[in-house]
Image (tube, rainbow, N blue to C red):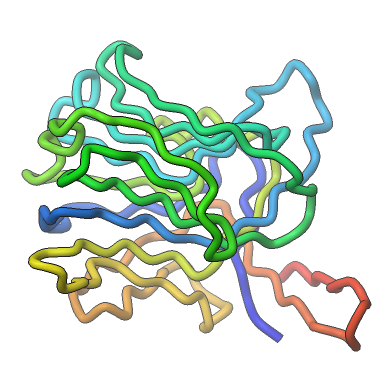
Length: 219
């Protein structure tokens, strides 16, 4: 079995502050997500996965967001909503684990998406998309930085962010959530980018025999 973190309600999130974000030719955001079905059509219909903010949060934000109906993923540079790129999704099911790899390829100026290690699509981006996030940034995982956009249940696991420099992959953050308890999420990259858990709850999933569903227990 394995642990993951379940995000429910507007105040559930992970906060990581004052890390060093190393620029490279590529930045990869990887995570496992199991998205719950949207129950209230009037609710904010998005899964916020990453929200990176610079010193001026009104001008410097990088977000990775998945629509609650699992129909689209967005890479956003939020300067009054002026810059977003979208890749459509298809065939994804609620309450099923998928591994997402969002690749920001600065050398080719492309936003590439892989799901379960299979290439999905690619779209052009601006080279300057990450320039705001190398000085005193902070990061929210599992929610918007204002803690106001998390009305759709989701579970996250195996979170990793890497930077590729001269064809060498450097791990900036990696969280495998094996501990299954407490309010600290420990960074196993050696960089000390530990985070604080707010509101999210640990769940343990027991894999049954082949062909059976997973049973989740919330702690």
